[in-house]
Length: 208
Length: 159
Image (cartoon, rainbow over all chains, first blue to last red; front, side, top):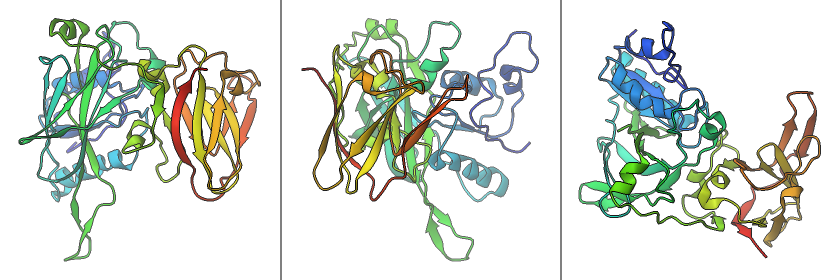
């Protein structure tokens, strides 16, 4: 196995004493891996993804998480598979780095700072956040997982970084957040000497 | 993705500044990023906004919306396992739509009891509700005529 791009799963099936569960497999993954994990996926739940990336052996990983989607992606996100394999199987692309992020709680309103990899033409950066994440440790509430709403904050430039406030509605609910940077890039056409722009941008999501 | 627990928010002195809003959607700017579809080449869209406490329905509220469609059409508005069909007269004028829970029916023809706990709101040209238990189906809408509809001021109204 030289590279992998799993979609909508492989991270949430965690059963003690089960040799076929996801956490057992994840610890054996050593190849570059791109996770395609829709943010409302009932099967591969996004809150298990940040655990999964600490379990794999590979240091080369990225994630693309489509806000609002359940168990299905659209082209903006699916293209992550192609560029990942372009990089690791064909050597024709260098995937942008995961955005660097920082959260500050010191000013009364959570403030989120993002530093996306500017090696590609950045089309937009959105920060999605929700207070409908489940943290009670009980069995996953599937309907809530599929339906939680992700608020969106659009950051403004502040020096070399992008900064946005994340106003929240409750202090009794957790705050889950993920920045997604949408990038557009120039792609070498199969016809020598012709450069075309890929129709769809890629969206990369930070997990930390 | 990352998370902050409630205890951390409270200890840091964070304030809850986001208040409930009767304006659900203005349809301005990047509004489509708060909605979703698995068929981006088509106009129908869905959102989970009504499930969020910020846009939960006030008591006794009606769902209101302005729509403009160049051609006469049937607009299907769906909520979870319920749907309503709205006749659009077509033309250049905005058409006001007002809906109560009972305007949304399920596959058996029963009305939506209340807005409480609704999760998914859908705008579309057609859809079919299905009862997985008995196979019963109920069709709404039809083939859309002309340009996609325009939307304005999706809101809760309490009179």
